[in-house]
Length: 356
Image 1: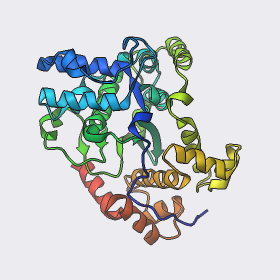
Image 2: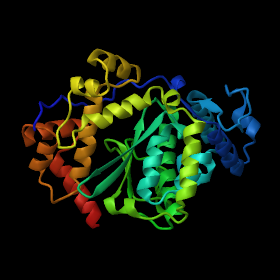
Image 3: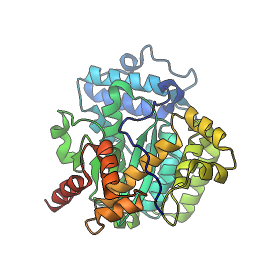
């Protein structure tokens, strides 16, 4: 069933202030260890930062995102390494994230590990969320930006995508042959690291790793159902997602409800009803998280379009219909606003890239 298309825009809604978000203290420790390679002492890196008075080694310690951003920015300046994000990502290990990491390592398949990562993404950072989307045989692990990452946006986005790839490689023992897409300009330092990471494209509509749906069924080397269950239970006990994600559970629920199983999308009233609240209340609560039903719908349509257009067997007219547009022309106008190009040109570029 078709619905009246919204007027999409490439401009993101205002993100919550940086100080509303946090990261685990373990990320600070990883950064401290990394910059030692450039002979940067911990005191020089951390001096003057507003860090918690409690020990950073405590499991539940959280560090304000603003302090972490400042530490990363300082690390890049002190090391003189502009590509610090690649260095951070390539050093990432699942075991560094405690119970969450051990649960991911014990999962049966890549899909199970990703679904766990999506649910517990706030443990890694409330500023960067994760979503998994699958359309027509193509899977996409999307990294959502929930906060302004300031001068280290490129570092943190590259670190997250490179880190996910590095962990997947370690857990499966094989290259899943994915590609990375990032909503940042290509940095001059990319060429120095290109041989160490999957193929990457910049200036894209969103941040994500794209792979075949079959890659989700690849088994993990250390799969252990009992260990997975126990580690997951400890994750549930160790952290309250609602508090960490600043209402992120509501955003995730609303996003999941927008798409109908039979196709099409739900309205604001329908989503609010499913969540047992009034439309006005839902709008207010989503606004506090820096988003809206309009934004979530736009992102869902965009992300589905990007996946569907990678499948040459799905005509553009069918893509438009699946996304609820009255005509391919309306869809093309929306797609150009999202990406700056046409659906046909986007499809050609990805088909040609895959062939090469």
